[in-house]
Length: 283
Image 1 (cartoon, rainbow, N blue to C red):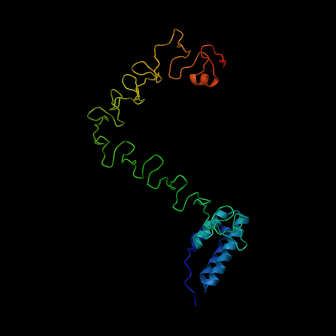
Image 2 (cartoon, rainbow, N blue to C red):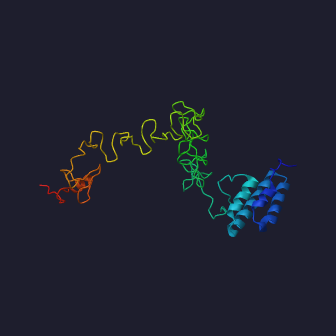
Image 3 (cartoon, helix red, strand yellow):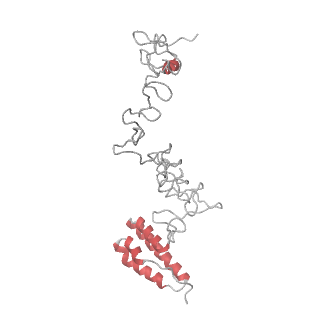
């Protein structure tokens, strides 16, 4: 009388992933496993199948197919890999020995997870996430990808890439469907938020971040001067001589160089005089 009913194996699915030259022998092994009466007999035949598959795959170079075939037949390997009775897997690795803490000499447990919880082969933790916290589909635990959007396409504030929420409203409460056939709303702004005639957004800045007078949101022009004609250090824009250098020896611009091509930071680091180009003598 049977100890218990043998697990059902999809024999054809297993054979389909194996090389054609071993399918006949594999079918015979699987038939023997199905016909086994006792659990002890099934365990023995199961290990016979693992031995034959691992040894032949290692010598024949079809370890990937062997792993898949054994998984289809018996499920995931309990030790993270399929070992023959000799203690060697298909790729020639020996069955590891585990210490009292459950980890082998290389720091892996029996399921091949490291001490910090990541799998040797997949690089994922037990929840299926990598060290950056993303799953195989690229989403973190909150459901957002690296660009900050969830699977539905909304960011953490509830807006999509075009700036609209699930109700098709932007952050000002305006409808996504307010545009005419020319792509502009009642105020003359296009889909991207810039006015079709002025090229400015609703805050008055163009796509490069400058307003109609050429100043950015910090109040500086592209040359590095504010509306009062001063740079970030408070220096006057009109302090330059006919040659284009100020009294300290630097040219125009926020990172103006001296006549030898060195910036203020270069000269300070080398203790150079920007007017003479010589190293200052420290007394």
